[in-house]
Image (tube, rainbow over all chains, first blue to last red; front, side, top):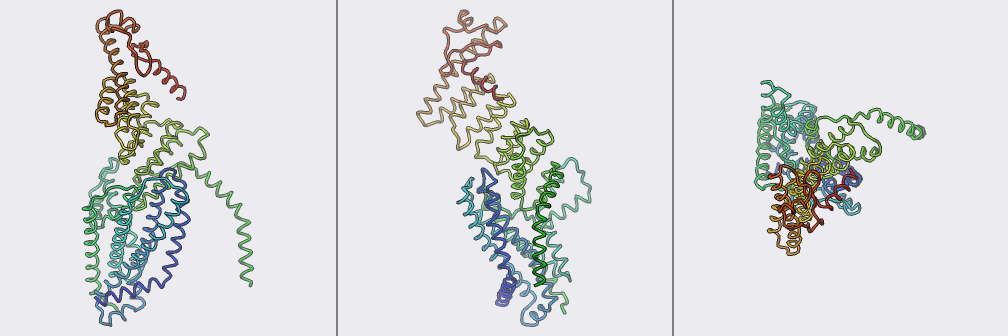
Length: 268
Length: 283
């Protein structure tokens, strides 16, 4: 356990040292300047638009971090021989994968929290000084949205680790993770659309591919509570529990697969 | 030093060049002003988890259209584009009320797309369950633009059931529309039901006054129906009904003076005619 925490700390420090903070400040500045502009153009629901924008920007920043950090880390360790020096110490490959995963998770948590604070600040400035109109949002669901956003990002990181464990270049994990995200976000809608469409006749093979993708890829839209938070919609507690369970199980499956493949991989 | 000079030259060149590019980009934008919007389902799938922001962007597009072109008459294609964009925007985020307001303000009055506007507002009504303005707009459109007071009354009655509105006003409005669509019994039932539910004594008094007016109208309407059954034609006036003993005295509406019969034999009051004439002036 100590080894995992040690590796997580190294990962966190390493990423922070790579000027992550400057990137986050840039995103925060973007939020700060664009939120009032967007809100001014929404006559009746400025509060909702401001909140939508803050949540979407934070999600997007997290998404970029998860995709680029997750798909790059393992292969870079292999290329730079960092992995060899780590696993020659009393650190197992399982501990290596979990440590790196926990490290990226901490970075995602840290950056999300930081951006949420900046975002709330720009939201407050916008609503206070531009006298935005709208309904009062659900702050509990606002927090829940980011909790599930991080869980969704962890699934992406786990997916990128999985593909990194079988790939020899950084390019493939990057492309795979982007594709994984796009598929996860759209497959449920695509399946529903194809099934309900009267104009598109589904051939058996296409139907099989869509069905297979639907069950293999996670439904990432479930982790999105932006609308519920901004418009104060009710979300049953059981739904939250189920989604959390769903995300955790999917992440664990990917991590187990990653560790198993990684254990068999020849690293020299 | 030389590199800084070069940098300065390029920056000056860039600044000089900016107005030229500005003109070019505006011309290009005008060139590209083909009002095309992809299918809303396609937009939904491709906007991933950012559909609310995409919805806001689509709405902003409509604002620039509304801000710049309301004075000129637009062709059907352009109004169609506005409808499709508002449809896509409200499809991606049905909870945002702004697209519905733009639809009601422009698609109806300028674009004459009454049914299309109502279809958007139906979506708003379905998702914004605590918002009375959506059914109210639909009811208004049915009554005012589509000349269907019956459907109008039904939606305004639904608006009255929602929180945050002047329930009495909307109930009174719905009952008037029911009267206009020759459904006085329905109007009575609506007002009576609400009168029984209210705990406010002042409201009950207001409802009672409305009920009295409705009962008086119903009394005349029933007399007209009885006369028509016997004589197989409309009575010429209220006086005819009195002379033939269908009415004992000349009834008076507590809200609009004396009743009279129009050329179709419908029971009317002077105030109703005045309101209708005023409405026609604005149409």
